[in-house]
Image (cartoon, rainbow, N blue to C red; front, top):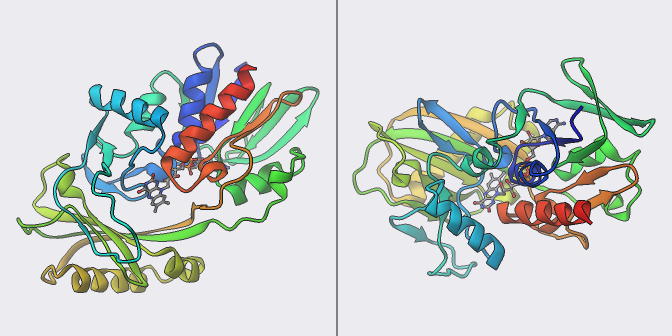
Length: 323
Ligand SMILES: Cc1cc2nc3c(=O)[nH]c(=O)nc-3n(C[C@H](O)[C@H](O)[C@H](O)COP(=O)(O)OP(=O)(O)OC[C@H]3O[C@@H](n4cnc5c(N)ncnc54)[C@H](O)[C@@H]3O)c2cc1C
């Protein structure tokens, strides 16, 4: 029996699984088809695709700076070059701010950290139950599995639903609303002069990233990842599944209008709604661990809205478990 069961293969789950695996046996489950969580990579064809969640990261803390520097040396990560256009007067541009991305996709960090872990995808955890010092987990495929220790890394609303009967801590009583995001991925006619990204000041479209500028693949098309503002997505997300075509069209029209790129035929288009994209109000604690019941939680939303926040939370949890 594995000592630790980790739910989630995003940065939080991958980091804690990697740290625990050095001295324990670890098994990981994720409901998605592959690793990365909100930093996953959507394939269009072969290695051609889109970073449709996390766009890039700019390390803030010395520890995460060191971690990413080591991964750049190992060629897991790299700096996203080219021309990044900053068009938002409400935000302050930091010109020194590096944009770091995965060499092949932004789920490369999770892939790297999970290399030695027993990972099981398309395995959705539906219910947890604690009895006789064991955690009994029911999965969507009907399977029941038991573990001594479990670590959950889901977005806050999903975590609350799964664990509220078993975690008695004030952090779980908080009512936070994670912002939504609507992402539209498109492939359009190639334009040799394309910039790498745009940060817009617009009520609907917040960002556009040019996937070709990441120099991971060659394609006869230009691939763009368009991301909405939180405000617009918060209003649209509950109906996005039914209105994908209409919402994508609004974002694509905005993209051509705001970037001044000549409007062309859309050769491919895909819409992904993120109901729980991020939380920008940090909690008092960075992670949670109950040493008696052996249940732990780590996730970005404890610390902040970025990928680095999940990494910090997972390392904080590891310290608590190791005490
Ligand atoms: C659109 C978007 C853009 C973003 N842009 C940036 C950016 O540019 N820079 C940046 O630093 N951050 C960005 N972020 C935030 C960043 O993606 C997150 O902070 C980070 O990826 C969170 O990692 P995590 O491991 O805590 O959670 P997640 O990545 O959400 O991982 C949780 C995992 O748990 C799995 N899971 C959940 N419930 C269950 C269940 N019941 N059973 C099994 N598995 C389950 C999920 O499938 C998922 O893989 C962005 C997020 C979004 C959505």
